[in-house]
Image (tube, rainbow, N blue to C red):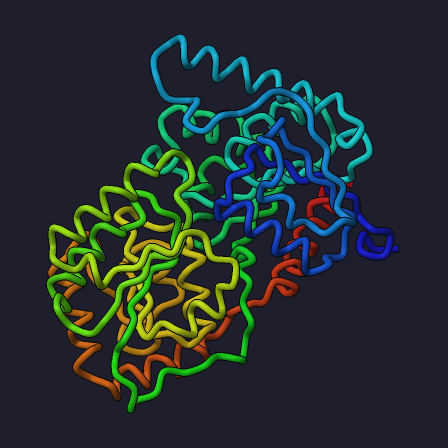
Length: 388
């Protein structure tokens, strides 16, 4: 009897209630009715409502341990001691929980959850799988996070699921030789084959970026480029995404800068958006322009599946999906002038927009959430087979 037939029991660990990419990806995958029995375990979170309310009722939620606040690994020696104590307490809470004892496999959904999950699994024979959604480097994870990932988490991992080949390559030097390792894109809510394509006879009306409001996601750079290209034109710029992890002040900085550039009346800040396909159908050009290499860029997958005209930074995971001049435009990173020029080029060339839109929707390898879940189940079964 296969693991799928006997309903493999997977304990998913996550540390936050913020609507981050990792949390939304896990929710989408579990909503797709995967072939395993899932349980979610978190530390104590803020009072409902929170992001996990979107989980299907069939997925039990278990709470234990102590809160794991964002940014807790930064600061001086006392902060580091406090961070370590919180991880140890959470590891103990996970290790002694009924959900851990009855699980066939543990899956850590975030880097923080992987840290305490690896400690919990250290003396256990229960297989431990880590989701990697950030590049394994100090810039992405922070000094303490990088040390934990490379010295504690990855050496313990029986399996790794990375969101891109670039992410997986950054982790390989720290993995055991027998660890199962696969690159599987995160569940991004894609509807493959149903794109509303951009027409050659339609002018550019709206340019957008779908990403959480965060300085490294590139909203400031896109705002500057938009102002250089389209100030005073009947073209709008929309930012869609919440401002978790304490970035409300950055959002206000963006608003002030838009006014300084003379485009405040052309810019819409939409906040978190649930109906992503409807949102994207209203955009002509969709931009990813993070200021450090994106491990994947779920937004890029969403843009492609929706048949948008994609503009992306030419580094990291997005380059695994976007071919310059074919299904999107790749722009040198951290170069506002180059980004502005790419936007002007697309505005002036409706035939290019129509070509790129059609090719985007036909990008090979795009997966809906059920296909992503099935790929995860294959990894889980390989990990279990290797442990036997």
